Length: 361
Image (cartoon, rainbow, N blue to C red; front, side, top):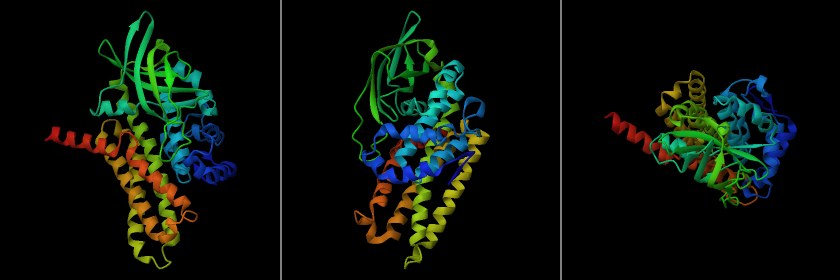
C-alpha cells in the first residue's frame, strides 16, 4: 500500500490499476470505470479540506496522489489530474454556492470535472487568443466557440471550466454542463495511447448560462492565482512516470549494466530536487508571482521523464522490444511521448520563456 498525503490506497485499487494499465492505454477498459475507481480510493479528495468532504492536506497532497497513480498508469493519472484540477478551481472560486452544489458528486466520482483552461493558460502566457466568446441577453450569458481537446468528459455527467472572451472587452471563467443546450461533445479522440480517458472536443453554439455558473468574473485576475495548482498537478504525472522508469532501471542495473549507475544516480537526484522545489513553491505561493520558475520546473520534469525512460530502455535491452516482456515498457514509452504535449506544451512554454527574456532585455 502507498501513503498519499492523508489518503491510503487500498489493495483493491492498486490491484485494479496494475491489471488495467494496458487496457486503459489501448481503450479496451471502459472509460466509465476510471473515475469511480479513483474516487472510491479517496484520490479525488486528496488535499481537499475535510470540512468539504476531502481527506485534508493541501494541493501538494493532490500532486502526490496523481504521482502515485502515474507510476502505474498515466491514463488513470490524467483523468485524476482533470478531476482534481476542476475541484481545485471550485476551492479557489469566489462562487461558493457552485462548489457546495457540485463538490459532493465530484468527490464521489458521480460527476466528472474537466478543465478546458489549457487555452486560457496559453492566452495568459500570450500564446493564443481565447476560443470562446460571449454576449449578454437579459440575465443570461450566451456562449459560442470550441474546446478542441478536453479530458474527462464522461458522457454520463460532466462540468467543464472554460475561459470566455466577453463582448464588453472583459474575460471570465465559466462552468459548463454536459446537458446544456447548444453544447456538443464529439466522439472520443483517436489517440495513440491513453484511450480510456474520455478525451474529446466540445463545440458551443449559443449556450445560455446564468451568472451562477461563473467561477470568476475576471480571468486575468484569477488565472495567475490558479495556474500554480493547474501546472503543479500536471507535474504529478511526470513525477510518477519518471519514478517508475527509474525503479525499473534500478532492477536491471547490476546485470552487466553497471555502466548506467552514474546516470541513474544523477536522474534520481534531479527528480528528488525537482519534487522538493515544486512542493516548496506551491506551499509558499511563490509561483503566483514567479511563473518563470514554474514553467522551468515543468520543462525540467519532462526532460527527467525522457531521460528516465531512455535509461529504462537501455537497462532492459532487447527484451523491451519484445511484445510480451516489453508490453509495460512500450506503454510507458507512449506515456512519456505524451508528457511534452500536455498543454501548455514544452514548445509553447519555451516560447513563452524566450519572449519574457527578450522583453526583459
